[in-house]
Image 1 (cartoon, rainbow, N blue to C red):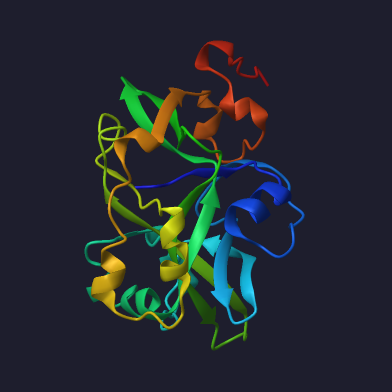
Image 2 (image 1 turned 180 degrees about the vertical axis):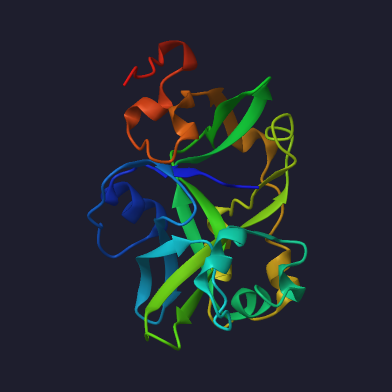
Length: 229
């Protein structure tokens, strides 16, 4: 499962990390939730580029885009055989840049968020799939994406049994290559990242409410002062 991410790096940092020709104009996002837009990275003959897409994949054949609320993640082990994901796995792959993801543990009725991030560098590259959906009634068009998940590694498993697929830098080209359509070769990339890649720390319960999207989301829980109003 991956149900909340953050992206706080500058455009210059993204350009350097993902070999972009130009640095995009960005503003920091501390609490990106499903049904919201997030940046995704794709490749074409013109090079790599970033585009905002809605989180929660809506298959092109869907009658109603509300199905996207159930498609925020795709299991990497079965995506090649699921009608909602198999065509996207062959033809519409993307990377979701992030400075980490959140998972939760419970203490009674309280949900405690944990922020998982890379130890060695600020950005991680989540494997994603995207789709383009067009309404037959209004001609509305939008693009959406899902994040592929895999079994949790030793760093994540104490908190959750699933984690996003985090790609190695050397695998970016293969994952984004539009000419690569062999599901078996692609599935070799969809494995848990090395345990030593990740570290985690407890953060503010502000993360629990997706309306909160500010630096205070990353405060330690002991420094969180909930508003009385």
